[in-house]
Image 1 (cartoon, rainbow, N blue to C red):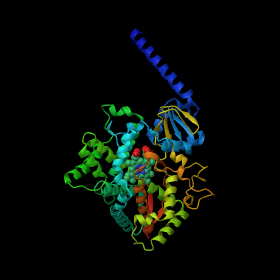
Image 2 (cartoon, helix red, strand yellow):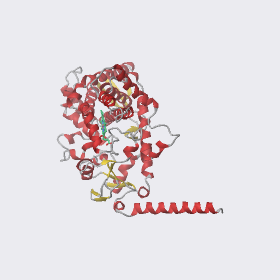
Image 3 (cartoon, helix red, strand yellow):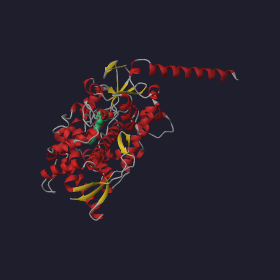
Image 4 (cartoon, rainbow, N blue to C red):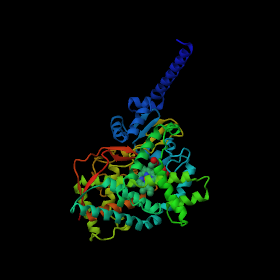
Length: 481
Ligand code: HEM
């Protein structure tokens, strides 16, 4: 054999042995070796990366927790924690910084948005910047814009019902997704996209593509540097945002909304907050502000339609508070419905849209949930699993809104084990926006319509940032009341 080839083979063999030795050392020695988890996950990040890429992580994680306990190792340096004090420590008490994975999901390398910023001081500045767009008085002022979108939604539902001779089967997953995109664009970007009216599926498909690509970027960050790989966010998505920005700038008029906040900062500091920064933030709000709320609303319908006694109780509460079907459905009146609020909380507990994720980074050696965690470990609170802990939530899989009111089996809901909007400094800024929107959507649907279960539908899901039905729709029977 050629000598050069022999030397090359020996070097390759030596490198392979070195890597195997390293993998074995990381897997089976040191503090993380005491944390249980699937065998191959300890040796390589690949098995967990594949689950994330295929969207199956949400389905497999509960099985791992059942088998291995409330703290599990899903990668050589990755752990997930479903134990209450551990989650509290990571998110609130010690406010761990976000994991490097958030760096990898930036559309433009080096350009951060609110969600992908890892530096605490820069993040605080960004959060302060958007805070006027989420103050209670500002949110309350959005009511007429949200109502206009709901009016269009009702008009379109009525038209479908009429077309079907008094009954229609509606893909609520799609229609609510379009509604929340219309609400987001109407309240924050200067005008509704009109997706409910046009029944356009394109934007939601673009969002899904973007989220799938983000999962790929997160697991294999190097792909963004390969010459033949298309950019993380395609031209179509970018041009939607660029057109919104250009329209606002060209109009010469100022509005009081989120877009204006970003446009003003861009005008004042084009170097530090460039057009790419503006695009990152706008994309984030477009994605984070729509499918999150619509999926939560759809899941609430799934749970209510499969629990008719709870649905009946909710409809009774709504009918008592709104004696006429034409009563105005306002933020103030829907906020005061205790059973509705309990239904929403319970829905976010049983079917949370962010059950996994929230990956954080241990900057120092520390102890979490009784385990030694070395510096450099990725620690991810599994909030979905914590919200199913049977020691905290009796019959955790059951949909029991009463937990949030009088209690269930002698136990009241524990708000310290409830984090559907995350918690701590990096919690969801859109929480109050989303709750207002959810309440008026649900009251509109149950005051004015009789919804019925279309049985036999698959509930199988895949997680691409938020869960998506693999069948691609969720049908509901609709009649006017
Ligand atoms: C029911 C609806 C919603 C749920 C359950 C929800 C949940 C969450 C969760 C769990 C996070 C933390 C994600 C992470 O750390 O990786 C988050 C972050 C975020 N959410 Fe929401 N969200 C909802 C609606 C909204 C809405 C309507 C908006 C905008 C109007 C919004 C804007 C954001 C933003 C900008 C972040 C990033 C915050 C940061 O990293 O600092 N969300 N959301």
